[in-house]
Length: 116
Image (tube, rainbow, N blue to C red; front, top):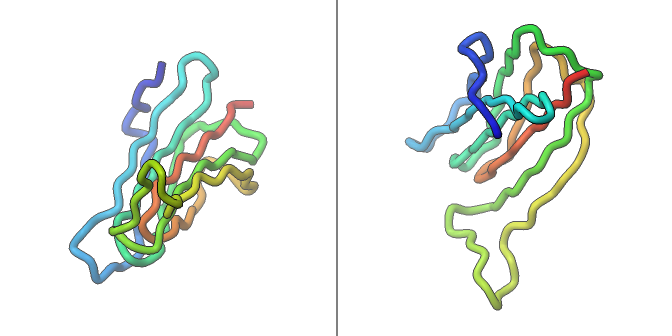
């Protein structure tokens, strides 16, 4: 079960965009594992930089990222057709209480940070 973290944890989108659409985020805590989970959605046509500030985060500096991205708002995964967007999973380093993370255009990203 996941719960939202207190307001002391913040994520801010900082890149400019010509689109009227926004970037969205939520930070939560997996109560079973203690992992911090950051979900970032970018519906704009350009990469976005998020400034992430998770107060009192104790981590080994790595996180697992799950990401699906497209090159257009028209991308769609339909049964029986070739997929436009494929989920990628990878590990990132440099995670700390405060860090910047760039997400690609038209993407949904989940950053899972295990507690130390």
